[in-house]
Length: 137
Image 1: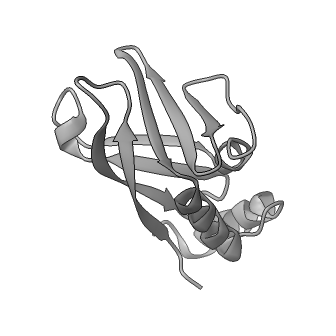
Image 2 (image 1 turned 30 degrees about the vertical axis):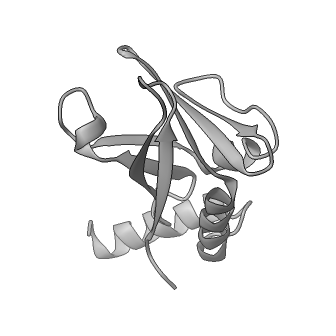
C-alpha cells in the first residue's frame, strides 16, 4: 500500500492578467494525516518566491465536486461538468484556480484506496499508535 500519494495536476490561475495562466501543482495525501489534503504550487507563482502549500480537508475537496463547499480559507465549487474551481483566501488576497474535475476525482479515488472514506479517524488512531510504539519517524 502506498504511504503517500502525489498527483500532479495542471491548474489555471484565474485571477491573473492578462488572462488565465497554466501552472503545475501537486495534490498530496498522506495516511499519517488522513483527514487532510495538501496542494502545492511552484515558487514562481508566489509573491515571495517560495513554494506555496495549502492544507484543507479531504471531505471539502470531495464535497466541492457537487456544489459550493467551504467557508474559510479554502473553498471549492464545480464549474460545469469538466472543471472545478478552488479559492484560496489569504491576507494578501484571493487566488482562484481551475482544474480538471477528472484529475480531482482520480486523486480522491487513489486516496480512498489508501484510507477509505469514513475510516480516517481509525487510520489516525493507528498512525498515533505506531508512532508511540516505534517513535517518531
